[in-house]
Length: 342
Image (cartoon, rainbow, N blue to C red; front, side, top):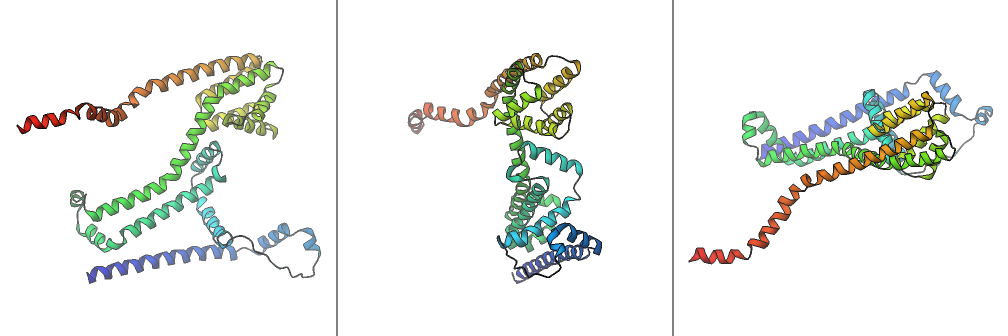
């Protein structure tokens, strides 16, 4: 026991020392980058950041600096942001673009972008590692001895060992905390896409009504985006904003189609672009697309209804049938016991 406690204390000291060394290296690197700014950069920053009045007056003025906000916001938040920005450079561009696309569809919950979301995910990963370490710390020496002196086959045979159960629980905590932000984001994306699919036929009906009233396609998009507060109206509003900054209508619609990746919306965008090239009447095209989208929504509802019997088998077998058997066979159990006791 004394040797195990000595091993635990040694491992704890090694872990704390390693964390202190890593933190010191990171802070030293950040400090060197900050101090290593050349004179030209400092002069440019002073010239850009200083207002004109401060550059004209050369008399030094003592200004009392007022600090506001908590110490976490003033001290730790800039440090965390600098660390996230540093590691953000080494992420693949395709991963960042895909994450930005999902966050845009999910309406940027809590104002998160790809940089902050990755920081949240890796922060939860480190938290999971720390919790797993705390969970396995009392038996850390025994685990090291077990993994050092036991083969893989013996570890598989000792699957239900209490020491290994703690290891499995620690791994599960790490995986859950790391995958939780991605699962939450995917849930928000699926919810937003489902809402867009459901409201798309109604939006196309309103577009066709606006077109019949004499409005152009751009004005109809503007009217629908102003009238509704739904996911599809926000996408239409984003299309309008892109056209206002100089993007063509076809390119803005393609951007919406590539961003959402919904088959019905992609076909609608393709038909609108083709009708514009061919010079077709936009109101007739919108009427046809609205009717087609309603048919697709009806078929999708039927598909969901046809899946329900197969999904009801599991709750029926686990919850309803045992209750029915208990109600039917319950009164017969005393009679059966009397028969067997004779």
